[in-house]
Length: 614
Image (cartoon, rainbow, N blue to C red; front, side, top):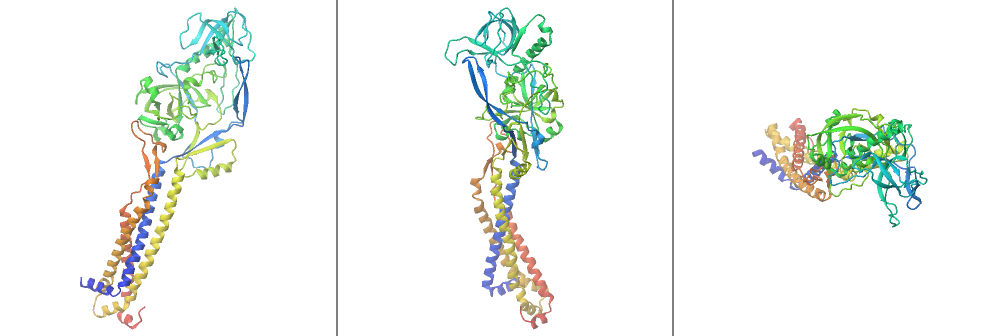
């Protein structure tokens, strides 16, 4: 205790130097504390954002040209024009896959399957369907159906709604500029849908007419999109003769009639390898209401599980844990499911395979419902990337059957079905890599929910924090070396005198170190406190500038009744970092002081007294 007072008394003779030492050391600790706190805070936020944010890209083939196509309109007896997009050679998935890219998921081009099962209820009881029918009929008189021609209904091959026998109707081959003449007394088989009054655009009083709903046709392709050779003619209607249903053409009409029921008992099924790649989930237009989403183990094991819409679950009395039978009949690489399966194959695509037969299921199994999803209020149901009202989602690996003989449609890549996931912050690098490949006719769109801007901001903060941290370390070393030199090295004569007076080495250490340690502690405490306070002020602006929604990130989906979580930058300053900075500097001060004292004590007192003070 006596030596501590003696040490302080000796320092009292160097008041100005002591004050400067405390101030300079406090400033150095402030820089170190501020830099350390900012660096730690920035790295924590960057790691947190890396987990919460997801970056995906979508791929869409652009049209090679846009042309005008003539469509005959029997009502105005002239052509109307519509815009048609035409594409060159279809781009394949291998064309857009970059071997050098770091993909986290994909790239993948998702088909969708059509599952048909008589148990499916697709709509509410009060919601009607279209009235597509296949029936036999005959005209009352000879005529060309360029306008309404009165017909008598005979045999009905298919109708969702019961049709009374001997129902009269008017038929018009509305889109045919040169319709064939129909003869009274002959029977014709037709694929029809109910339409509008023939002169509704012109304001004339005309009867309702039935028009061709589509063709007896096939659009089957192979896995690369090459059309298969169709072995039968494309027809809207044809004459029924004696023994017609014993012929191949007659059997084909019966096969076609059987497929019409798919319209009312089919749902689209989309195989997915990462829910983040589905834009409705990524954008927050779709979210989970019950159960759970797919996990990595589900994808890897190809588990027979599914997510279904709340609309479909309600209409079919399904809940989480129930089993849903899936009978996959068709596979499509064209268009999207946004219009729902109950309308996808309504005259827009051939229902038969290239041989004129109805497609047979390529996989039939029961899937467990593990989750139910819904659409966010206000989300558009008209977007091409929207999910179908009755759409079922399954892990891609769950399908073990081979759909190669059931591809009913094929088209260009769309943003809704072709996508990939890349590491956050790598959009620029990916675009550079893409441009090097020289791929033409394809558009990329990236989504990262603002991660790039956030990363730039955090990277700037990290640079500043590293600069402060480096400046703090250098300043601490310079201050300690300089003032330890003043307080210890230049006090060698004092040490020699103390030792000549009989003081031991340990006592001399206490004499030199006690006061210096007290000054160092004062500077460290002052610097740590100031650094903590300054850090709080420095990050206060972050509290009002960094809000992001987890609704659009990392597959995080809101649960019904809960508001989506808002991501805010973590601006809580950890006081332990500031304290650790001060303690670290204090420890460094002690070690450096002991090192310099040890050097003094190694010299003999007479040598120190005989030499000049450095």
